[in-house]
Image (cartoon, rainbow, N blue to C red; front, side):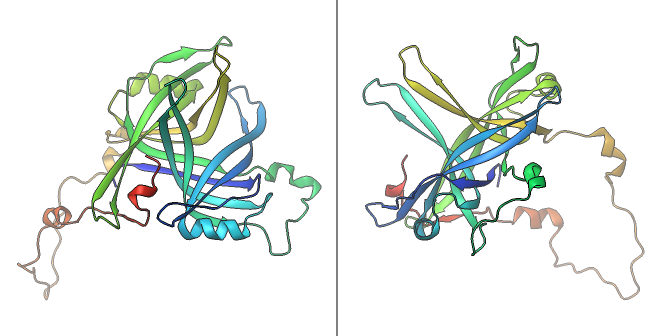
Length: 288
């Protein structure tokens, strides 16, 4: 794999589920999860709130959810971020919505129902909202400063996914563009160090902002609010002394022998095949 696009969520289902069937008979449904969270800002203040995420389930996972997931149920979801785009039929404007496509689902409630928390458990009631991406920066970062004097920048990170269609055996590819927001000192470091095309690792929480246009239409955008960023494919002076660039001569055991038929390490690495993933979803089922 050349990039990473993963998100892990622990949240609560907010409404009854409706399982739909595609024309080819594949089940699909959407979870609507609310995720309580808290974090500290640059001033050390603890802020709390709620985040809402749409999660799409396919196949047998959708059937199981339709049977057992009820409003209020707590779930763990692991999946990937996917942005669907379309053109508004009335205004001809381009619209988009980011959702989570589930790869794994775990039911978290006990069989006898959810328990009442202890009075001291308030700090333990926040849930999980963690996205991780490895990809290439789509443009040079541009630093901005808020009216309150805080540094903030937004960068685009592109990730790609390849899979083999189970029906056609064709290799398909999809590119996702992630909007990443960075604050404070981390924003300053990225502004000075990161350029377009560089590969980076980003981790943070996913947040959806909404606003209203001058025409009164509601709009939304989904972003990764990063708290961790790493440069990839760069030299690191701190570990230079730990890197061994030449082979160290070793005395072979008396009965040891070199197998002349064994291929060199470089040849072995070159022979490793590219990983392909077969999809159970037929092309006509996909919304793009």
